[in-house]
Image (tube, rainbow over all chains, first blue to last red; front, side):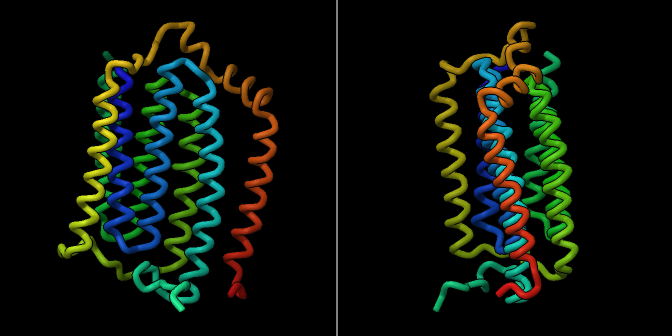
Length: 99
Length: 169
């Protein structure tokens, strides 16, 4: 199996994540798209690690997953706090930093 | 041959799930499409002989993170959601940007396709990156990083509780 197929799949998934962030206006969908981009990058990292026979690529993916879990917990807590204050999840209506 | 077949099956599963997430109307449906993507990627890790990462993907992403997402979506009780509706100028720009990112990444892959290695499936190549080798490397070379990640997870837990408290800002 050639490694380039895995990289191409990773590129497609990453682009769908980018499109999700740019097109959708719901904070939860945007967050899910970010998780999709993280997964796409993980896939290419594992592909490279296995292709070159180096175990350290898998270790990097392991630590990326730990940080992604922490990021998801804090991000969803921020989403809850935002929803309490504004009663909306539309990111066009959330403008906390606009004076 | 079997690896190639399985790769394309799970690649189709993951791309269909991602597109379903992109165009779905309700957030719960989007999260469930995302579970499908996570499981397909876990199976792709298995076709790469990365069993540990595949199992961790199922446990952490499909298990923990997506359950957290579903829990928050149900907690917030969202009814209305703007669908990927009519086309306006901003959406056209967003679509062009997304396609541009895809074109750049695919160009990189195609240009460098000659230098890329095959995924090895010989006995010793698999043994060099199997679970015991991974465990030894994590617990010896990267033991300090492992401790830092533990502290990070503790800080994230405390931060999430503080942020989600009722009296916060």
